[in-house]
Image (cartoon, rainbow, N blue to C red):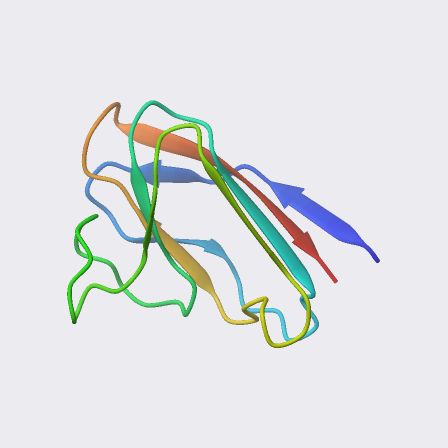
Amino acid sequence: MASNTTNPTIANATSVTILAAETTRRGLLIQNNSAADIMINLEGGTLTGIVPTETNEGIVLDAGASISLEGYGVCPTGAITAYQTSGASINTVTVVSFT
């Protein structure tokens, strides 16, 4: 299994694609390396905040927390987007994708 590690930044109050779609993705790890919470959308949706609603769907990833998904049918293969509203002007995450 091959891996790809990136460290995208998320501008304050902006929805950003942190990982492009990859149909052969088998595993995913996202680590929030900042002091601010972020929201992750595993289907490439545009986020408008970090409060989940019917139209703003995602997972809130607390500062310092991580999420790990692996296996067919469990790991998303679409684009991954993120959003942050507080803290510094950028929010750094580590994204590891396995194919």
